[in-house]
Amino acid sequence: MARLSSEFFTTRRVLEYDDLATVPAGQSAESLLDVRTFDSTIIARHTQTDMTPYTGNAILVRETVAQKLSLVNQAAKARGLRLCIVYGYRHPDIQRQYYDQRLRMLRKAHPYITESALIRITHAFTAVPSVAGHPAGAAVDLTLVSQAGQSLQMGTRISDFSNPVKIPTFSTQVSKGARANRILLHDLLVDEGFAPFYGEWWHFSFGDREWAVFYNQSARYDEVDVRIKGDNLL
Image (tube, rainbow, N blue to C red; front, side, top):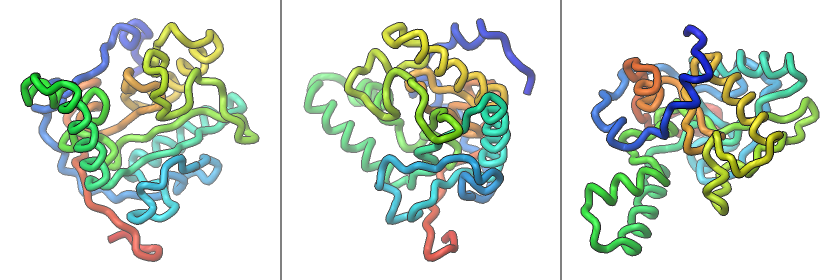
C-alpha cells in the first residue's frame, strides 16, 4: 500500500458506528494463528484473562495480520525496539458481554435518549459486536517496548480509561516524549497497511470494517467463533 502523507492522518477523525454499519462483512475464511507464528521475537503479553477459556494463553489473529505484524516488528527492531501485543482475537460472546454491560450502564445514565442514539454512544466506548474488529481476528492492542521488554512511555497504559482525554492518539495532554512514541507506533503500523483507531492510541486493525472505511477498501473478515482445545483450533 502506498505511503500516505502525514496530513492525511492528522486530519482523520475517529470513526463512529454510522461509518461502519453499512460496510458489508468480509468473506475470507483465512485461519487464525498465534500472533508470534512468523516472528517469535514479538512479545505477547496478556493483560486480560477474559479469553483464557477460549484460547488459553495464545493471542490469535488472522494469518495475514500475523504476517504483517512480523514485518512491523522487524522495522521496530531496526530501531532497537519490539512490538508488545496484549490483545488480538476476542470471541464474539465476550464482545457482546462487554457491549451489553456498557449499554446497560449508559441507558441508566441517559434514560431519555433514543435507542439509536444510545447505540451510537455505546459504540464510542465499546464497539457494536456486528462491526467490531477484535471478534474478526483483525484488530490488535499493542505498544512498543525496548529490546529488553521495557515499555516505552505512551502517556497512558493500554486500556486505561481513568483519564479519557489522554487516550486519543494525538492527545495534547501527554508529554512530547509520549506523543513522539505514539507517532512512531502509528507510523510503523500504517506503513504496513494497518488502520489506526484514533480514539485509542493502542488499537490498530487490518481487514475489518474500520480498516475498510479508513482506506476505502472492501472488508476482508467478519466475526468468527474460534476456540482452542488442547493445541487445536475448533
